Structure formats: structure tokens, C-alpha cells
Length: 597
Image (tube, rainbow, N blue to C red; front, top):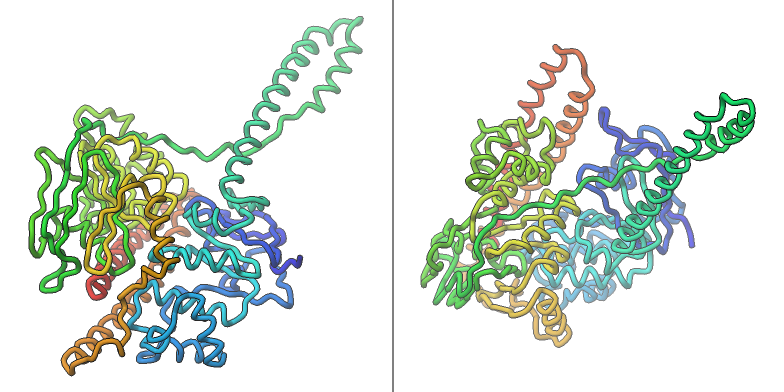
């Protein structure tokens, strides 16, 4: 067992915000560590520091001479026109047979290996990146939210790969199911301190709860004993016959110290819309075709959703999950067929394109009050705001100064204060930390209405789904049973070889006409341009997001009114700029989905 990476007395701050506050940690060559913590606690910052992309303010990082870091790249490293095999050989310098053998572990074989890499879907391109990473022969992996936007099949392949990987890993993820399946240790970051626990995530949270309960009981006993001693000393120190006893008790008192520990970060029990339970079909689709313009994403859909169910809409990236959701939410017209909601359904939607249109002159509190059901008390509104991290003075911020993530949380809070009988939610866990996602799942499980949702978080899917609808290869299929039943079926199909995808089709499989060839090239060019723009926008989001964090830290610390006013002007301008960048990100993401569909 070798220590490959070591942090010693590490400090890192942005303004007054201490992300690392004199903390230490060691990473062994056989540890697979799940890295958890609330949003903004410093997880991604630590990953960048370990990669050498950022420096510590103070402290040391020790790297073993034999350390070979592997990092799953988020950007697009491919060249136009190159095949998967050509990319792997160029990127790693390995022989073609070696590249092919490792690619086979991720089911990249035959025409897929020989075909153009840019024709692959996002999930398959991630497989190619994983293959390249493995071919570099790392002995320690750094993975920052590796399951984000991966289709289920690729998630399962990544999970199996990590279980078999003969080396160490540090994995940042909000998905507890994924961490529990892949990690032997848990690293927690809170209030600038790192805690490494020799066990899985669920065991860590149980240990943390038991430790806190023990400390609280011990402190209660100590405080009771202190009160007894203080009472005795006060009564007896002035009497000659008992003064010596009082002095002895005073010495005992000096040794009775309570254990100081941070209180658990507050998690609020969310309220849910109080709606009447109903039975029977909520939605019936018959002969339905969905898509954009002349392009059908899925056709001949026959689906039925019962009142009171929580339906997970799943499928590989680019297959049409969001298209299906937008169609049933009536924000996208069906191409053909019939879609009928039962009488009296009141539909509320959560999606990225929804929160970009919030009334910017409203404050957080004003917006939530207008969205809340009649006769909702102010305290209930404030409690819901707090659940989504709008606390104290945050409720008086105008929507104009909120970031995209804050607007998304605000939109979700407004939905949960309403009286909608149907909730349609596209990735509701985005922009929320693990604890808030769990509170949201608990709330939605108490909700008596109907929930139709998508999510890449398997923990959330397992807790929520009572039935599953899969969008795949131009069809929509109802799967009875919960998400675990669906997952079992998918694993069986993969094992039996019955789930070989038809997308993307290898170039050699279908003869191309000159017209289809020209259309494919034009489409690939558009996709490349969109990816390039998206990468640029994501870099801007990261850059200006960090600037915003720094400004907010300065605002909390500044005392001079003139300096405060100047900083507030900068903050408003920066938030406005961020909102524009985030709106651009949403537009580009939707365009990418439309091109891939």
C-alpha cells in the first residue's frame, strides 16, 4: 500500500471564504474514494488543485514519483474525420491491437471502432475517452461528476470498469448509488475540513449520525455534572469547614470540558402541494408521434400514465426524453396522433427553458408568494425558500441578480408551493446538493399528485420511480415496476446481448447516397460548431462563476459604504452577464439535442 497523493496543512480561500482551512488527507494506491460535500464546499477546487491546475494558498501537496494521474476529459479531443481507432492511437501512442483490445472492454468493436468518432453519441464518445484514459495506464483516477449526462448503459459499464480497476481513484459525484457501488472509502468536505472514512457513503452518514448523537449525550452528562459542581462550589466556598472541598470541586470542574463540534448543517423538511388523490388514467397517448418539424424522434406511441404515479422517463442521450416531456407538457406540438389529459389536471413544469423567463423585477419572496397556493402563510413560504438555500437577506434579492442555478432552485420552490396536480420535471436534481435532493425526493414521495420526470441520478430514480417509460430507437415503452425492476431487466438484456443499440449506425452498414452524405457532413459540421461554442460558454460560466463567488465574499467582509456600493454595482453587472451566458448555454444545449435527435 503506497501513498500516491498527500495534502498537508492545506489552505485555499476565495476572499473570506475558506474552502480548505489547514486540512490534511492521504490517498493510497488501492483506495477508491467517493468525495462528497455540499455545493460550493470546494470539491471541484480540490480536484483542480490535485491536477495542478490551481495552487494552494499555503500547505503542501506530495506526489509519489510513480504517480500516474488519469483524468476523464470533459472537452472534445477529437479531430474531424478521424475514426475511433485513429484517435486512440494518436492520443495514446499505442499499437492498433492494444487500442482495439482495451476499447473492447467498453464494447467499442467492429464498425464502431473503425467508424468516425464524431458520429457517436455523447455516451459512446465518453466510452472512447475512458478507453484513452485507460490506455495511458494511470494508477490513480480523478473523476469529477463522471456520470453526468451519461446514458444508463454507459453508467453501468463505467461502474463495472471502476470495480475492476487495479488502482486508486477519487470520484466526485452526487449519485450515492454510484458511489456505494464503486467506492471503498468516503472523503467528506465541510467547513474547510476533510474527513476520510474507511467505508462506503451510506456507512459514513450513519457513522456521522451515531458520532454526533454520542457527542451530544456525552456533553449533556458533562453539563449536568458541571452544574452540580458549580452549585456546590457557590454554596460552600465561603464556609471554613467546607472551603477545602469547594477548592477540590473547583479543580474537578476545570477538567470537565464539553466536546466542541460543528452542528449538523440544516436540512429542511419540504412541504408539498396539498392536492386531492385521484385514481384512473391521468394521461393517454394513442398513435402519438413526437419530434421537431419534419423529423420524428419517436412514432406510434401508445402510453398510459395513472394518477398518483411517479413516472421516470429514461433513455440514452439523444433518444428523445426531453422531447417526450416537452410534448406531454404542451410546450411542443405532437407531429401526429392523440394525447389526452383527464379532466381537471393542473400541470406545473420544471425545465431549463422555464426558469430563464422568470419576472426579473420580483424579489425571491415576492415570486414565491405569487406562486404559492391561496392562504399559504408567509412562514411556509420562507421555510420553502430556506429549503432551496434562500435564507436571511437572500429572500429580498431580485430575480435579476440571481444566477442560473439560483433561478432553477427558485422555480422548483415555486412549484412545490403551488396547487398543481401534475408535476413535469426535467432533471430536478440539477443545481442541488445531495441533502437537498434527498429532501426533494422525500417531499415528492409524499405528494398525492402525479410526477413525470427525468434524471441521471440513479439514487433519485431508485427513491422516486413507481414506473418507468423508456424512449429508445424511435419507440416509447412502458415498464411496470420500480426503477430497480427496470435496472434488473436492462442488466439481463445486456448480459444476453439483446440490447445492442442501433445508434449510431456504422458508416459501412448503410450505403449512403450523395445527398445523405452531404447532409451528414453538414450535420457533423453543425454539431462540431455547437460543441465548440458550448465548450467556450462552459469555460465562461466557470470563470465568471468564480468571480461572482469572490465578489460575494468581499461583500460580506467589506465595511466601507462606498466600497460596498461599488462592489454591489460590480456584482449586479456580473450576475447580469452570467444570466446571459447561462441563457446562451441553455439555447446551445437545446440546439445540440435537436441536432442529435
